View 1 (cartoon, rainbow, N blue to C red):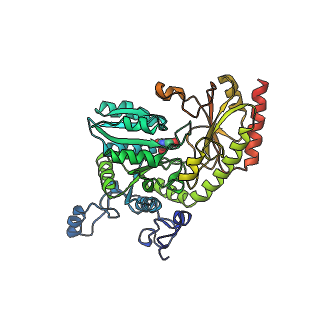
View 2 (cartoon, helix red, strand yellow):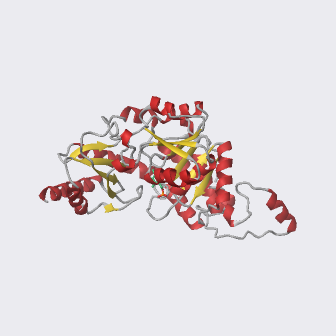
View 3 (cartoon, protein in one colour):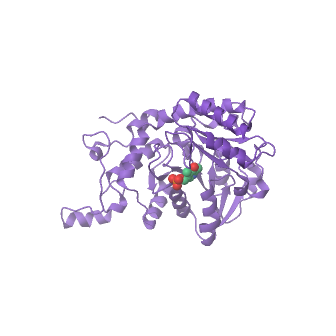
Amino acid sequence: MAKAPKDARPDTKVVTAGRRPEWTGPVVNPPVWRASTHLYPDMAAKEDGGKHNEDGRFFYGRRGAPTQWALAEALTELEPGAHGTVLYPSGVAAIAGALLAVLKPGDVLLVTDNAYEPSRTMATGLLARMGIESRFFDPLDLDGFAAKFCERTRAVLLESPGSLTMELCDVPALAAIAREKGAVSLLDNTWASPLGFPALTHGCDIAIMSLTKHVGGHSDLMMGSASAGKRWYARLRQTAQALGHVVSPDDAALAARGLRTMAVRLERSTASALKIARWLESQPEVAQVMCPMLPGSPDHDLWQRDFTGGCGLFSFVLKGRDSAARARFIDALTLFGIGYSWGGYESLVVPFDPAPIRSETNWPPAHWSGDDTFGVRLSIGLEDPADLIADLDQAFTTMEQG
Ligand SMILES: *Cc1c(COP(=O)(O)O)cnc(C)c1O
């Protein structure tokens, strides 16, 4: 197979990226290379091997083998502006690995107030213990953000849309401010992936993803990645090697396989999510739908300006309810599994109450309407959206009868 043209579109690259004949041989997908020891043919080769610490060179299992290299290379090709990608055993490990690559004791980290909860806990726990101070900022307040910087501010952790509350922020503007102030910007880009939001071309320095979600796509593996340009890629790789991060070749093969269908899965789940979000908007039980893809949502202009695609994850708030009514609603659903994670082929639901994981000064977020706080997050899978709507509809009826 000849190499795909450099200017191939993202949906084509999802299919062709990382497929080097020297790694895959005559089969389509990279075989699973289970390896710790890599044997050298002779002493001279061993001496030479030790001198090079480069991608795609056999050395020892911790530096991977063709299965992991193929996946990392595919992700690099999909992330415009990236020089390389480091794989981690989970999305959280990717966030930790990237932050540790950038920060040192005494530094200040600015964290978006709508960050994924484990990122928040990492900042206030692990990083604080290491003498790294975290300050949370309102992602919708650009002036407030600029005012948070001090001499010691080293990095900024962004997420858009934010976890659970789903508000978009102006990532290009926030990243530009960070750059001007001499700070490194890291974006947890799990929701959009480079297909929906090419982070580095929007000014971020490091793009992080939980591959557990869209790339895996089948709810059967845990993995994370961080991609960056030359300078930060070198630091990411060095730090990952120091921490001993490695992913199994079996999981890398599964993730690479998931990647090949990611574009069509995202297209389908995005279209279904939009249909379902629209339907929910008109239901009397619903106070608010938080879905930036929805025309009329407060951040839809930003969505249209910056994003080239979405996914099936969004939230809504039940009107004037209590936790018992919400539990009745969720228990009555038959097509939505109750469970964490998202981005799989099957639909999922989880309840959430975001107030405890926000700074008091930033609560409620600008997009939050009224006093209703009983949140429900849906991850829309590949089922027929009409069946999913019917399921939600009957669950509302059960809730009302309670
Ligand atoms: C799930 C998730 C992660 C963590 O990924 P894991 O692979 O579960 O560790 C990070 N960020 C966001 C936004 C997520 O939703």
